[in-house]
Amino acid sequence: MTGWLIRRLFHVTLVMAIMSVVIYALIGLMPGDPIDLMIAADPKMTPADAERLRGLYGLDLPLTTRYWNWLSALLSGDPGYSRLYGQPVGAVLLPALAATLKLLGLAFALSLLIALPVGIIAGLRPQGALDYGVNFVAFAGVSVPQFWLALLLIILFAVQLQWLPAGGPPPAGAGLQTTLTHYILPVLCITIASVGDHTRFIRASVIDVMRQDYIRTAIAKGAGPGRIILRHTLRNAMLPVVTVIALDFGFLFSGALITETMFTWPGMGKLIFDSIMGNDFNLALVALLLATFVTLAGNLLADIVYALLDPRIRYK
Image (tube, rainbow, N blue to C red):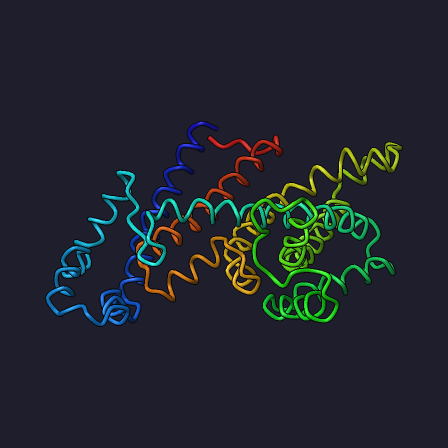
């Protein structure tokens, strides 16, 4: 197990190194020049000032040299300075990451609270009326585009009914009730997008386990329904679900860009969008790399949990 874990950590490190090259190259190919934006913001800037700034930020160096300088500084703990926010990148990223994790954590927990019992019940009684109803609702949930769902929720609950704020974080010092009202719509939007996937996969996993020989053996030995479900079905059915849930977390993290932009939520998704649109390359690079790391860490955690849950697996 220790050797397997070391290999997996090496794979994660290798993927991060490759992704850093890819992300840096893509950001470097983006149209727009931050110096041009500075000139546009300050018409008094002379060509000499522009050249001096270009040298100061290292923009006159070859792309490979700039990448190496950036990576060396990042590994030494200096992610650079955000031109858009006028602060060090770390000071901008950490609050945004915390805001995204709060949003995704609530949505993920709510999604599992709904999907686990519904998927298990539907899987235990396949081809029944309840199963058809669950499948229909789950399929509808995964089919709705997230941006369209966000617009629908805003128009219905914020504009027409005026029950909830249309977006934005809760104000500083707000009470619990006000804070919750700001979370409801973005959390609901992410939950609806993920609960259908979780429900369908849990249902399929339960159906697959119920068809296994050891379940028939347990029934033949006279085991009761409760023992069959709790001891033999759920544990085995949850093994592939763990992997899918971890992968879904990475998907939700990347999908937060849409939700956070639509609800003006100050998280990683909106930060990445704003930094790319504003040609804030330092911030965009670190934010995209951090999003990649969170996704890889989720997959690694899923593999570890999978190995701990299934005694048949022995990673050597």
